[in-house]
Image (cartoon, rainbow, N blue to C red; front, side, top):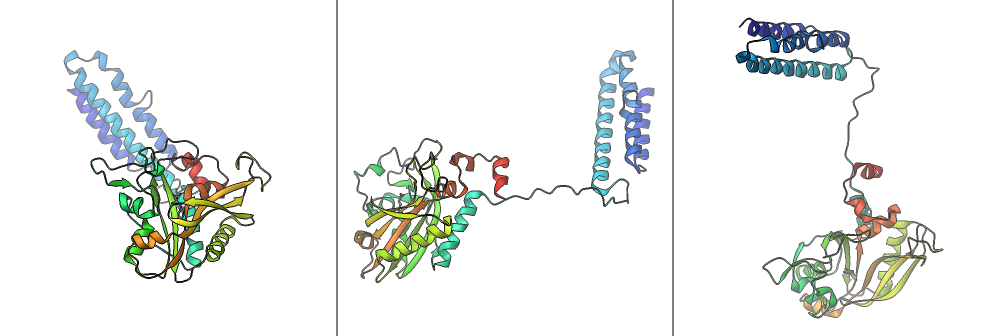
Length: 338
Ligand code: PHE
């Protein structure tokens, strides 16, 4: 039982001694006296084989516990030294501070904010819509009948057990919801998540973000659409060339797409723009009369709508090639957007 007393004594001594540690040198010295290779605890550990076999496990355990306690206490004190300078009560102001990790806004959110700010300055306000949509709002009311290719199971993620419910494939259903609930005139943008059953590659991800825009009034014309979109493109991308191309969307008529000159090659043609010199940034058009009808609007209104992919805008804005980087949670990547 003599050895048990010795263990208690060592513990008591140690905790008495550390109360008075004033310097890192002292700390290291105490460390070696107690748990160094030839220290008090180590010496007892080494003597275990000489003990009667029946008490070896108990003593071994007690010694290891003591060693852990000593290590923890020394660590605690050494951390205090690091934080407060070299000695208790003394603060060494010449030491570098402890780096403080501050988070950053995610690049996609930064781009979304920039997009939103531009439209806020043009008089748009912001609304949101549900991520789970019904078939009517996501497709039918937008002039997308049952046989339309985008209703194919390959594109749309349906909610199990609810034939009529799905994860919205675009933000356009919110056009209908807004018109159902708010009498025009109105000008809104609708940012949010969208979902499609896409395989992941450099430009596809099953979850992505869009910003929808909708401006409705008595006499909104295609030239208003052009003015707003060009203004957006210049303020988002700076000194670029812009072109509008005829296109097709079931819920706008006429429809167009907006391209900007490639921000990597300036329009000469490179791998980023596929040799074309142009990058498509959004789809748009004049609101189809059926949209007003399907949303229950009784009066005669005119308007335009547009929709853009936030990931795509962000890739172009930051001159990146692979949207998976946005989702990999690699701090080395994300920190660059501080
Ligand atoms: N909803 C369309 C899409 O997902 C984009 C769009 C929105 C086009 C509004 C025209 C008007 O691609």
